Length: 385
Image 1 (tube, helix red, strand yellow):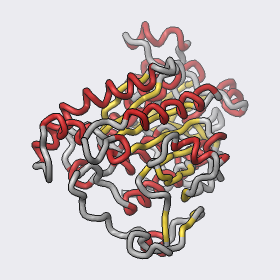
Image 2 (cartoon, one colour):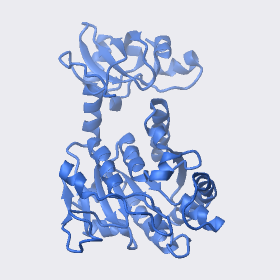
Image 3 (spheres, one colour):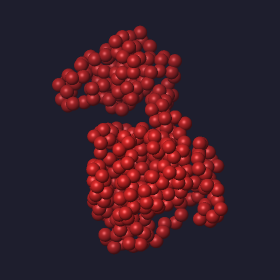
């Protein structure tokens, strides 16, 4: 199972506050961060793309402020504003030692749920990865509320993994996996090395999150990790819960450290195609010519030049039907343009889009990664509420 880590094309790694911050001093664990950076550098060298979801801003900020004990919401937001600067600098120093460039990305769960913000976030992260940078994502805690109170970086990491079609999600934690009983209560509790299906029995094993410790460094629990596993595996992404207490924790996973793997039944590409084909309600229609139909059959993207007409009130990112010259559905996909702009560029060469719209948009109306061949036999299922 550990080979899943080394074979992953794109990986999201989530680090909790309790791993980054020393419990007694409130300072960064510099040696631990350096060892993690060395692990990530090795992964980059073998061609893997890495995204980091990092907690720690509030913990660093409270240390700067000299605050102990529970914080009010406004104090948490203020601590995050102060700590975010130190956190970004820490990641930059650690990664630059290996000639790696980081980019700070601040998100909330809403950015992964509201369609337009989701598309913008996805586009930014994809571009950063294409440029060879490592996005370091943290919650935008200065404006978030529920996330601070309940701690959802596990779920945020899973939504990011789903959003960018990652192969693997690593949750580095202070626990080494899932047990049938709480190991803090029963030291002989059975450890589960792999979970192939998240059943009610598996969910019941996730004891309620423990009361926050004196340092209040972390806010997640096993329940949030099970929720993260549901999101990740549904998107075709394997997820592993592993202890991050040791130095070089990613190397430890690869060499057989105790972990729990939640295995996905599909790969990210297949899961995404299935979602496009069967779970989204089309908001419009694009009719294409015979040449474009042949191009799609060969696995190409749908370009504006091959479109003969457009109908419906779809927005950017909405699902649309693709209709062939014979009037039959041949594909479904996510439009890169809203309906009004689609109407303006129908039949145009991609090189003429900027002149017509006044900005440099996407070359394809539907990128091949966002398109699935269906045939007229596919029935429409409404998107769940």
